[in-house]
Length: 84
Image (cartoon, rainbow, N blue to C red):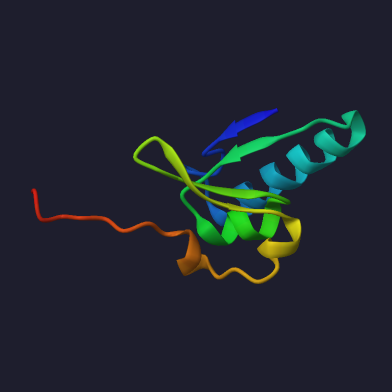
């Protein structure tokens, strides 16, 4: 299942409801799910593998064991605003 920014336009209650429904659907069907998010806390909380994509390239990968020790700031890449 592909979830591309599924909670982007939702209030917190609706976002929580949607994520619970998606998790239940996934569990019942034994699916692999790819969740794309800009929210590092969501990635850490929900992912069993976390990959960081920057400028179209995977720059960091965390497996389920490594994920236990990462912080949200570990998932945020460097942004250079100098060219604006």
